[in-house]
Amino acid sequence: MTTATRSGGLRRDSEHALICGVCAGVANYFGYDRWAVRLVTLVLLFALPMPTIIIYVLAALLLPGGERCSWNWFKSDKPEPKREDSSPVEVKLSDLERQWREKERAWDEALKRRR
Image (tube, rainbow, N blue to C red):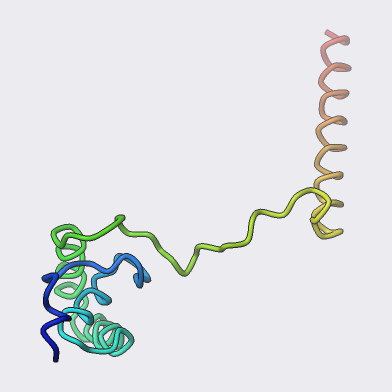
């Protein structure tokens, strides 16, 4: 364990976070591997769920760090596909939806004329 790891104090590590950066921050502070701390946290979550959740949430709220909980594994660097990049199924479904709306509009207009 080096003094360089403890120089900044215990804080969340938003750069290496998977959820809120608590496990990554604890790993950085004590000089452990991030995945080892995450694995221990997961084991504790199954063994003692409520205390683990309470401690994690408190640490996420109280420890200083960058951005708040980011759920990084759900983020994608890829931009959303444009209409021309869409798969044929998506294009077909959007065309069907458009046609359905047109039929609904025509049906509503026909009903209004009957009244």
